[in-house]
Length: 600
Image 1: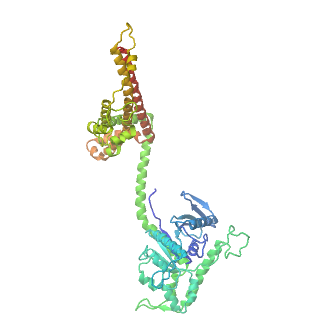
Image 2: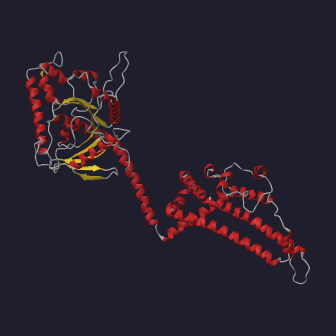
Image 3: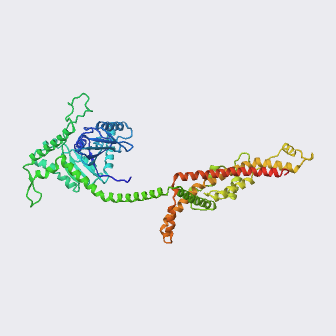
């Protein structure tokens, strides 16, 4: 329904080489991306996982820039991610891109969950201080690394700010007092109420503790509970087996020597073995350790409290439960939205059915006739005077009108007898409304006043003696000169030469003025319909319901774009034909005058 809705997702956040990507692959049940040191992810990767017990091999779909999902192999997805990383490495402006790479996957080991793999946070180098205690000068490499670190942190923090997201904070530390990733997470989630903490590489950390009490203190993480008592969950502890899965597309020479696992089934089995090994080691090291939870409570075995936090399966189950709770909480938001969309679709469907029922020749003609009457009435109202259409939008000042349709002052063959300054003064005093935005009849009268002023300011044409001699000619009955006729001939010809261009300019101005009335009339019709709709409840009190019912029977053809375009075309043609007919009538009048008054 094109409504914004943020589905619950798990945003995985961690520093480079913290085991973040390996942890995501272990949760998915198969390997698909690069792991190891350095920046392997420069765009967030949204992994929309779906549990499908029928899929013995992962099915992957990559969403393109056009929003269409296309099936891809794991190698093709990895090539796409590597190409994007290479592109951003060459980008001189930015190192990371906040746009997500959307991948949907189906597999029998996948949980029903959305994981968002974010770029690994970069530990920015510390610039040494000089002898004066001030920060020293950073090298080019240090400045570039600082810039990348800030850009990556800004992207990750912005991604974590979505309130519907669960944050999976990946820490690789043996001292909970120093949680560098946790400090970044708290910029988006200060009390960690949406954050689950996971400590990776447990198999390498357990051997470094000398006593069971040290292991217990590390696994309990009491300092985390005291600093963030409202955290969502954790800390959990996990280990992911090292080594990659050898796929046929990745093996060039047919040798599996560089790969630890032959397929994803073996990788999943290794993850389970690693979890069982971690739990067995923790049980062995803490088997004799007990502690009290209260003064009057009997001591309980430490293993009983610590084991629920150890293992990928415990983390996965916890995340699935939290995501399910988020979906259930969002039901209260989703259901009203779906109900509103259902009602809206129902109304639109009913409207479509009414329009389909109204598609008949008779009803279309009836609707067109009704629109024609309303259009002509609104057009007449526009010419007679109206303020329904806002003058600020549809009106024109005299300067705008002259810029669009030309002026009466600068016409070839029609010189003025006054200066430009005098013309401007006369326009301001005799024409008026120079700076007012006018349309319709008001604009028509302003054009006529300006035309009348131009006719009075025309310079009288010069008459040469040769023209007078040729106009005298010879009469029909005698050789004498008919001076009255000669004067009329000269007057008509000079008037035609100097006045015809002025009439043509008037025609152009009128075509412009009248041609602007079509969109103004359409606006007035829409305004009247909106006002009638808003006053429906008032009209119904006085019997207006029947009128609305009768009007609804007529197809509202005015909402048809093709019909409106046809009306505009017909109106423009009507204005153009009226202009041509006026020119023809003017010429006929002149010819009629000449033919009936040959001696005048």
